[in-house]
Image (cartoon, rainbow, N blue to C red; front, side):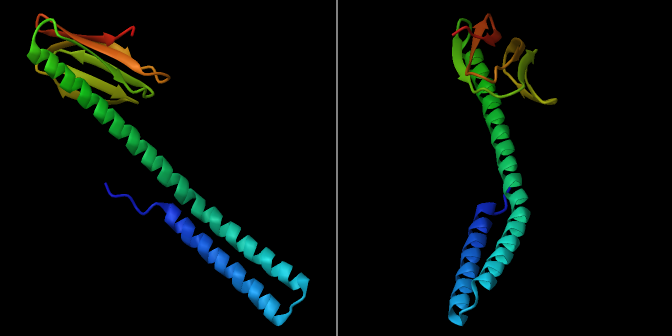
Length: 167
């Protein structure tokens, strides 16, 4: 997905134009030797126009920031799901007795569970499922958003068991 140019470029252009307009106004005022009251009125007018233009630009900046944050969270979730399924497949291939402990980044409202050979990753009502080579058993685990989550997976006689660790 291609993003539009970040609004900071638009803001930089706006600020440079604002500076040019103020400089031209000051130069014209001194060149024509206007009264100070007239100069103040022009500055107030320019200031009002610039503030109202900035009010229209501000939503563009905040909207882009939210879009980028949402995409970053989505990519982190995809990476976590991929790491979980890859680790489960490796443990399955290596056979009984293999165990891995790894750390999952804290994400808000993430629930991990497994049924049969399906690894289920759920967040905000959206469910993603990955197929694993072995039977997998993870009772519903909710990740803690405040700290790194230590997660362990172990192969016991062809079935992978996973849980949050006490590390």
